[in-house]
Amino acid sequence: MRYALLLILSFSLAACAPTTPLFIAQVTTHEVEQWKELKSRKMAAALEEEGDLFTYSAKAIRDNKSKKAEELYMSGYYNTQYSDEVRAIALYQIGLMYMSRYNDERDDQHALNVFYKLLNEFPTSRAAERTEARIMMIRQRSDSTVQKTSRELLARWKPSQAMDLNRPSLDPDLTMLSRRAILKDRVDEAEELFLLALSDPAIQPSLKQDALYQLGLMQLASDNPRRNRDKGIAYLRRLLVQYPDSPLAGKAARHLDQALNRQ
Image (cartoon, rainbow, N blue to C red; front, side, top):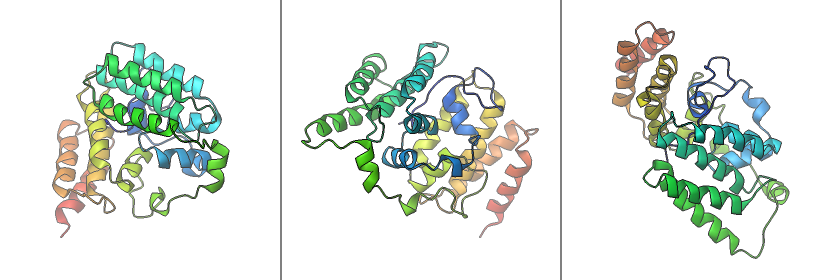
């Protein structure tokens, strides 16, 4: 799924260059806002129902700004500097946003149109694999005689205790995307997204360092049901070898030492 699909476009985070693809900024940085400011019921419900949504997309759902978010994603789609994989993910995020049952601006037909565009233009992309399942979901939903509004759904929604992103056992350096991957048992999918960032020559070294650090933390996390100590160690070592002067080197070395000495 290239995990929650990628978006491609600049995101106004201080640590990121103006041309940084939004999905990379999402992947490798902590959100500017504190999690407590993000915990609106609508946003939390949307994220819980659709694990592929980026926080940015969920915020658009929360704030009824789907059109603005779509414009941002489309600017990434039109930028041919990025790979087809990344451009496909931009379309995927738009489709997910408009098909969300918690979106007051929900438009299943528009979501379908975007998904079909994705399949036609990027049929071999990883996002295309995820898209087919979402199209089927929309088709099945249309057969229902009862179509509840987002407000009606929210009235009955209760947050999952398993999705406590502030769980004390999670390393404080884990991003929200990494935390969600761990708690939803989707680290393998998140790993693909980070590796995409590492393989793209247009992505600056600082973000690649962040990606390697997140990969190491996710694989070593005690809450990860598929925890892989060897993989975690390998990613941290790669960070230290390739970027010995990285600001993350000290933290990576400490985590590596703990992993190597852990019985």
